[in-house]
Length: 208
Image: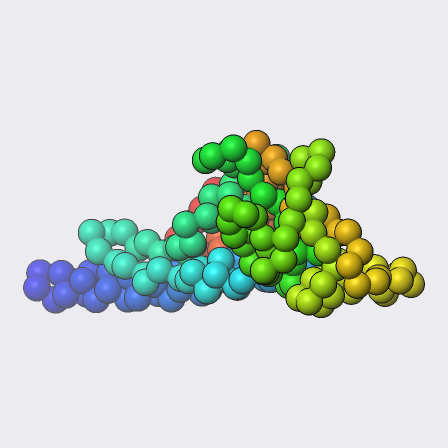
């Protein structure tokens, strides 16, 4: 009887070890897929990389076994992750905490799509240069740091002449914006399901 129980325990331990290996591999694939979706160009299913915080906060969780269960997963720790990750077709509405949100134009961004700085004031300036508001847009002059902005680069690449002192749009004022969620974890998980099930079958676990 003792030998029989020992064999059962050994079999259970072996199954648990194999399950951990399967979960580890599946989680690693999910993690790599999520990372790839976060550092490509912006599209309906991918998110262009900006500061890199979203990517660096995404990591696999340790696989845990016990009580007949084996669990694992991927965590995205950036506080704004919910803005970009969610169900298909969903959006996240961001409302201004004061009067308006300031949405940077390309003239206020770097090549990576990150704002070059913040408005300072009053009196309101951007990167030390005076600004003014007209029809819901904050304008400034093409001087200093603005000459190396992404907007100026795009205009020059298109053959447009950019002269010093030219009036340029810096920020668009909005009371709220709706951001489409581009990364859908359930869709990613579903695409990996067949591989996941086939690997479980190899260790003796049948799935439907």
